[in-house]
Image (cartoon, protein in one colour):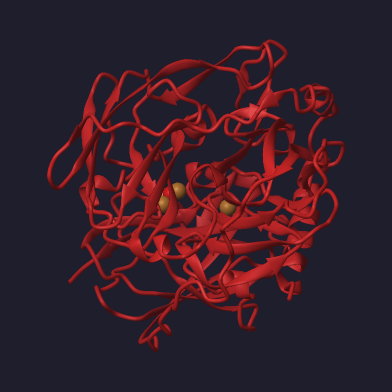
Length: 473
Ligand code: C2O
Ligand code: CU
Ligand code: CU
């Protein structure tokens, strides 16, 4: 059944972000209205990148980071920072057990660091904020793909620049598949559609306007890089991979007729079992995969994907599904998706308190700003750890999302209670509103070295809400 807990969280987030919105000057509120025509553009799907070379064991890709012109609004050109000229970046399709190598050539005027979010990768390929690719430089990243099928994404991570770089376009999808998932009768091929969701503030001439604090003024929402598209769908089941690639935007989605859909996966891949829902929260960097069944609608039906948590005065309509004729549908959602092991009993306890000091514009974890020369924690490989992450009540009513590199974790408790079913799978990013505490089971099993954890509201990580860990054997 539909879980209540997560919806409460959403309500609280909407309230919290609403408070922030109240502080936005009227001029920007006016600037963001009337931004886009409704549903005139078909949904683009980011192209799948072809390897430059396929060897017996590896797929080798090459991308160039460069400026490009995007069409966020119909007929309006917006200059973006892009991977390979695409906005969002091209999709990499990877297979478990088959490593991928990506050479990134930086032709932008800014340093970058490319991070594979959710990936288990060696330190040198993690896009650590200090491992920069300077303008004119290049770097080769190695992705072993030794983990379960999941919807991952890549994005810039250059320290203090990541927020603006990502805002200006530096993100893309990385779909990892495996045999176990192939065996399930889920919708496949053209019925498996990624939806990369984000927002932005566009100036009058269509230029991206960036201000780290301006989060409630980003009134243009986009799906796969365009504002308010439509998608023609057959009257059958679809799998949608929702990815929130926003810097700071909290989404909560529902279908305009309130009908049910089924969540099948979270950040780290398939849930143990499908979860029926009628709305779904998606915070920055979170992924959720849902199956929507359009078979009961008459041809010609139009359904709108709505955002339940808009800022005051914002348009809540994100995209539209236009239902066509019936087609044969061999797909179904099985009752069991994949077993997940019980987390081991933690032998190490750590706490992370996320706070803001608005007077000094400081964003802190355990009272500290990020310092590349400091190691905050030293986890050991193979050890079961419990991480208690909290945002104190009343802390400027500021929501945060806690993310760690190099591991998917399990939520053991949210506010002292077992997590909702949709939060019980593999996660790498968890939302918190003020007053909330989550207890996570974390276990690093792959690589040693220096990695980071941070708030994935990118404005916050850029302002210091990040810590460093050194993982040792
Ligand atoms: Cu999306 Cu440090 O990660
Ligand atoms: Cu990450
Ligand atoms: Cu934050």
